[in-house]
Length: 71
Image (tube, rainbow, N blue to C red; front, side, top):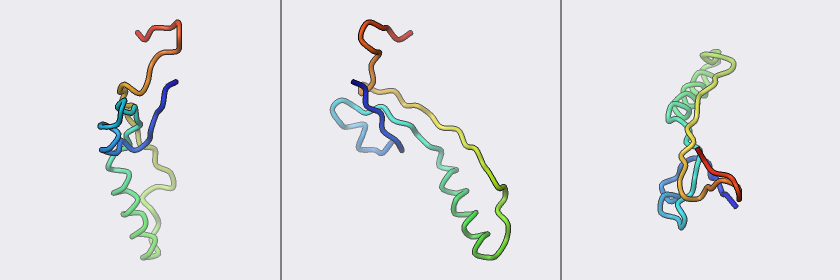
């Protein structure tokens, strides 16, 4: 069984086994704050939709299915 977390919290690095996780960019928080501030001033957000990439941080909490090898 593989387990994957979200947010790459510092604690997951020290779990047993270390948890594989999805890391979101810090820009996501900054963009959210800027958008909320604009909306409180009755201004339009910078963009109606924003896509930000994520990173998959593979640690020991993930393995290939039985009989398969990761390449």
